[in-house]
Length: 188
Image 1 (cartoon, rainbow, N blue to C red):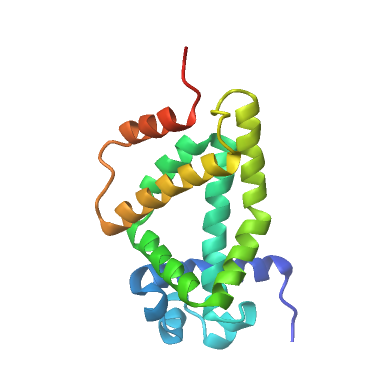
Image 2: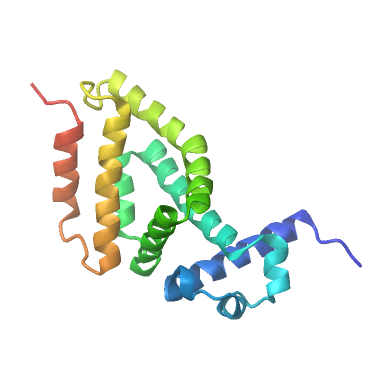
């Protein structure tokens, strides 16, 4: 039996994740049955679960990748671009995040797995970035960096909720200006 190259394995993982994202978007976490995942991805359950241990593992990978993408966007282009990006996200996919929140609230093991990866691998870099922005005068320095990052994250979560609900943010520039007035130092 021929061995599959690492490149082909990576392509197959991406195929699985792309199909699973469509399936979760369309049916939600609970509604994305293994049969629906097979149909959407175009692979058998054996092929799918050869790459991921469970449906939950696939879901967590997608959630983590989105978190990483948004945090990297903040690090590379700033909090403003991150908020603008969330406004442009697929509302159906954003709706799945509310299932993630519910699952994290009601399933301690799921919560631990999600938080462990996010908090240990992503949050520290973001906090250091905010701290550096404070030191160079780009963000107000009278609050801890965790509080500023938390505030922008709270706004981002609200934007995600409103977008997922189907109510688009009508004036993104006004939203950005309001957040800017809260997180940047006052001008003299």
